[in-house]
Image 1 (cartoon, rainbow, N blue to C red):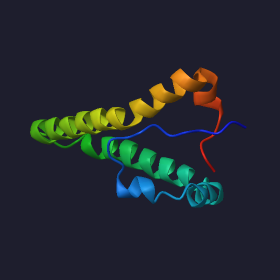
Image 2: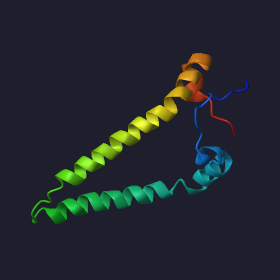
Image 3: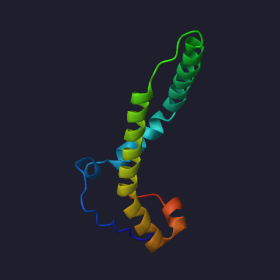
Image 4: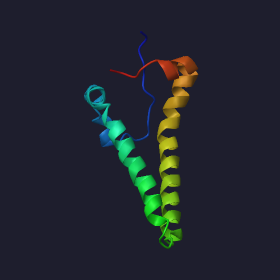
Length: 106
């Protein structure tokens, strides 16, 4: 396996420096079944909420929905700003197959 050098970020956040990959992978291996509980709860809330609201007046949520969409747009732009340099680095130096199929540092 070839060695991987990380791109030079202008700023690395503390949580990025302290991220314990091995611990997170262990936790995910041990708790992968929890996603089904969350999916079930989500489906109950969505469909139950629709049934509950059928006989009630609708909420006026223009402002909260606008704020939510602004938050999502800013979060997406920030995420692209943080991840694009690494993706471009890996694509330029190692190719598409490496970017998709080779796991990160262990």
